[in-house]
Each structure stands twice: as C-alpha cells, then as structure tokens.
Length: 304
Image (cartoon, rainbow, N blue to C red; front, top):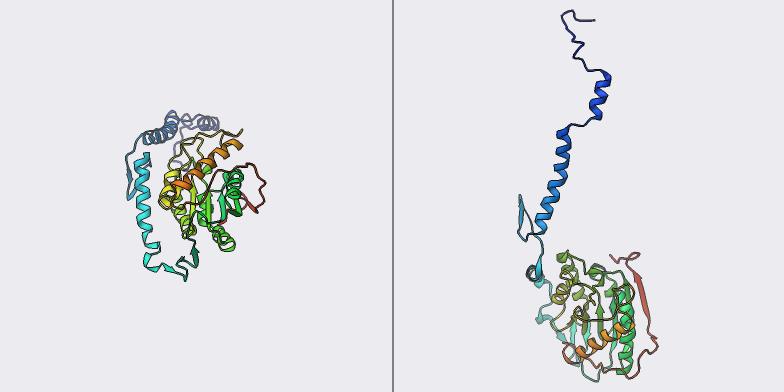
C-alpha cells in the first residue's frame, strides 16, 4: 500500500548503475587511510630499531637487547633468580676415598695421569671435531665412550630434554667435551636461551667438562656470552675469535679447520682450563674412529 503523502524524487534516486560504480570506485580518503595504516607502523618499527629506549604500553615495557651491556645485565638478572636452585655446598659429601659425591654421581679427582672416559656432546660441529678429539684421546690414553651428534639442535634441545641425563647415567663419563651454538648465532631471544643453558649446565654439574663455544663465521648477538655465563668459571672455551679455514657452506670448518680448532682447545685444556686433563699433541693424525656415535636430527626429534 502506497502512502499518498510520500514524495519520491526520481531525479536524486541512485540507479543500480550508480551503486555499482560507487562500489568499484574507492574513496580517495580510504586509499590515503589504508596507506597510512601500513606506513606508520613500519615507520614506528624502524624508529624503534634505531633506539635503545624502553617503550611503555600500559603496564607492559618493551626494550631491545642492544650491545654487550644489556646482554650482561640480562644474564646477571637470570643468574640471580636461579641461585636458589643450585646445590648448597653444605650438601656436598665425600665417599670413602675422598671423592666428592653430588646427585648420586661421583666427581672424579683429576690428575695428569688420569685416563678418562670421555663423552662428546654437540650439534653438527661435534660431527667434524670428534675425529681430531679422537686423535688426542688415543695419544693420551683416554677413551671416547660415546659421541652424540644432534644435528640442527639448539640450547633448547639440550637443556629442556632429558636425553643428556639418560646418556650420562648410562655411559658414566669422567669428562665431557660439549660444543653447540652454530645454529644460534642469529638468536636474539637470549633470555629463553639463558634459562635453557642454565638447565644444561645443571645436567653436567659434578662432572669435569670443557664447554666449547661455536666457531663463529660471523658475529653473534650474545649467545657466546650466554654460554660463558652458564658454564663454570674456567670451563668455557671461547672459539669465536679463531680464524679457521671453512668448508664449502662457509659455516663449518673444513678438515684442516677442525684440526686447528682442536689444537687450540687441547692447548687451553692442558694449561688454562678449570678441569685440566692430559692433552699432548698427537704424533699420529687421522687415526680410525672406533667409538660409538648417536646421530639425532632435531627436525625429527627435538627431545621435549
């Protein structure tokens, strides 16, 4: 039913063609607004990337970790929060021979004549380094009981899983060589990796060890500082400043590079390390590697 009082201005009524045209033609202001909505956030991110200031959004603070000073502060804060979880010295006991007992594991007393059961742990770098370590072990009377090559692994794999705990319990090493970090040179989430590195340090606590830093092919964002702070004082070997010949991928050392790397590690272990062991230069190189190897791919098994 039509209202007789209603007036329809047919001249101002939009046609179907007008509506289609309006829908297809975006407003000029809409285009400007869309451009600003993309440009302004990108500009803000760029400005923030050039600044070390803290940004506050409500109760949340956002701060970049830039430079060694901030990394050192982050490490210090995490270590303070973890102090309560470390074993007090008052709980350390001795067995009948005077050896220290810690968490049901007897810490061997080191000497120049000790012949060790050596466990190798690491990412793909240990896969190349183990051959040179094997030469040193056979020259000095040590035995490699196992090499664990965890390809593409990071601190999270080693620290969060119980894989290393089970291996230590089964093979009962008296000395550990551990190298990782090649896959973490780009890592900037240092807080999470510091927590994982502390967990890893707890797993090997009570066993003499040398924690070997990655053979950097480029500058890292602080992962070496994280590892060094988690390791016991004098137990971390900094590899990043070594000049080593590289393989075709430009990242891993080549065969000569691995040998030179191990020569540097061995010299340090004999003279400067907290846990010194006999590591004289081998007379014979490239000896057959006869010890067992466990190979793990982090892409298929992350461990946690």
